[in-house]
Length: 285
Image (cartoon, rainbow, N blue to C red):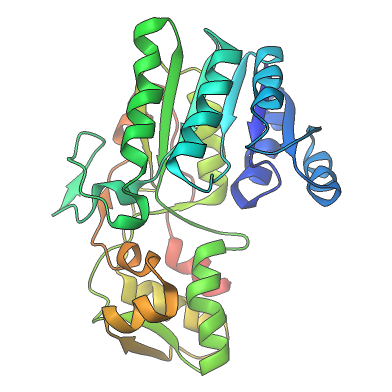
């Protein structure tokens, strides 16, 4: 299958391109700079110069493809919807996979699945109208699919590295919001990439929580990160207000208590997470 990808030079994009190519797909990916084009090419895809604001480029690339995987993070809900619309118009009845995130569920009050009500923190509240518009295309012959990954880990660890490992190295202790008793719905980067590949065969209108099914506490995750950066488990508790000052609005997302199951993707797509010991991976860094 010919697949067009946005965000291909990013953390999740590189892994997803590699997985698509490994499964025999031919991939084009948007690249806004020479550096990004080099990363995309090294991952196995053909670069298409442009960015999410180049709606004509996105539309034309999607029209050449049989499926689209939209991984890039837009600057706003309006920009994300404009890009999604251009690509859905282009791919027509082909599969269009849109990226959301499990943070939209807020605190889950136990283990939940994709049917849980939304209660998003402000940092991701903009996602709802975008995803609703994307999914409505199923009523008009489109084939939209939404994948909502949990907190990604593995490889660069991206957000975990930026907001936990790096401050820990700088300050001598990894931060932990409150007592750290809240749970994180984690997914390994390689498992997330395989889920995007599996979702190419999903039914129109499907929504999948991309989670590993292992939901450790934030404190246990912080302890593991501390060991990874050579601090021997040293962590420091900070208040939510302090976290907001240091991290910005994403602090409210890190403070969520989330436990989710990957059962739907297992049952409908035959996908199963292979990485089931996130603390061990986090401790290795």
